[in-house]
Image 1 (tube, rainbow, N blue to C red):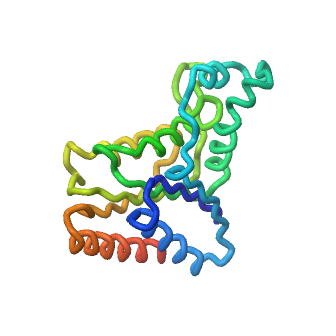
Image 2: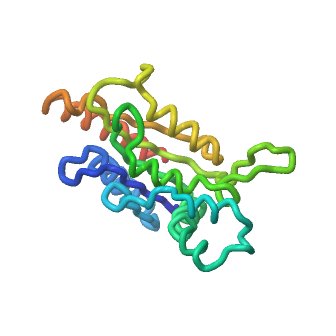
Image 3: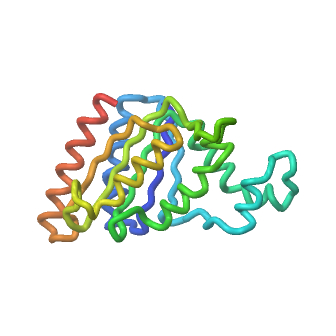
Length: 202
């Protein structure tokens, strides 16, 4: 199994999602000794934002790319190919202002790219190109928003992953982690338990 692990938290020691995702990967390693993990820490090393030069290069034919265009798309090519070459995608990210973090959005903007992870066919319809994969999304939320109209994180991630072809998606939320130490520990314990059970059947 080839796993692409995306860590999007800007925190280190206090990061809930880093601890939870690390524990899940360790559990998977026990089940799959040959597990190959590609780790992208976009929380500490965010990809560049989309620029005018990037748009010009991304939407021009590949055979017309000059060295400057190829340079602009270097990060996108690398990140998109990591996604295309994995079997399973693991995203670990806190909720920021009811949605995804800026660093995770930057990664998404680099990999959701016409001609790489989706294409427009002759009829003008979108055809996803990231097929046969499953995803696990581990989130942390300061409050309790699951199932409410404040949750633009799960709805957005589910929609954008579906758009490129990933439809087998599991979400594990650690909610209420900023409500106090007791609530934080309870949320992490529950999420860890759910992840451990998931790893057994993954």
